Length: 290
Image (cartoon, rainbow, N blue to C red; front, side, top):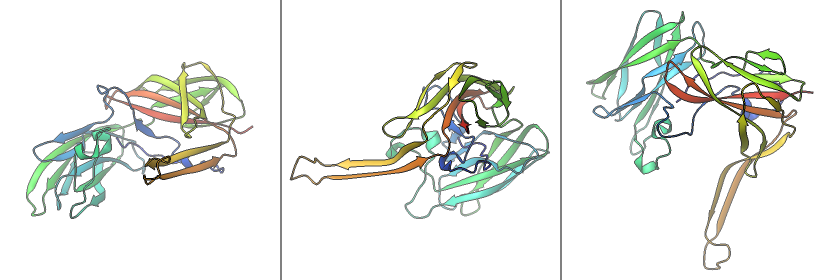
């Protein structure tokens, strides 16, 4: 599910892949775990997020995704309850044989088994006050005939699951912690709309440049990362047999190299959203500037 995006550019050193200091990721968990609010209407072929969160009295772009099945399909109108403003702020349309998929809804299905759509749209929201609202959008086809009307529940309030994070005795109210202490106790206090299910910490990388997460007790003592350098592999492909002269052998790797000015420790919070009834993840970055 695509959720709130927030940017933090206060750090001047090169944290290229940490620009999104707080981001939510669908949990790669058991099939029974609900990780998004997408609903699929088989009759109309429309896929949409049935419930989303947004902050209130904020210009941050919070939106719901809508996928439409046929070329020329479009959202003709969006009506909301009092106190909420909504409109389509982004559309991605495909023509000819090209289609798009919603990977968050389809999970890890093979490409030939995923649902295919001809367009993707984002409906953005602005709420003046904290509260629960509704937004109804109408879908029409290329000829202007109504296909369906769907309702999205919009919760305006907390979009950050953590009320505060205490590290080494200091309370922090953001997703990035700047410290000079190499170790200390870490405790995550969830906002009232959320529940912390699990904590994990990563201070190192494996041979493929992937973060190595280990379980962490909430309130337990941690030691921060010491390493600044690592490689992150984006794509690795190999075909053929290098030992067979009759076989065409091909190998391709692509990766990025990072060398931070200061080490970064990652804390992954798995939490339950009581409003959306979803299980998701947040990543907190702790940076030792000593």
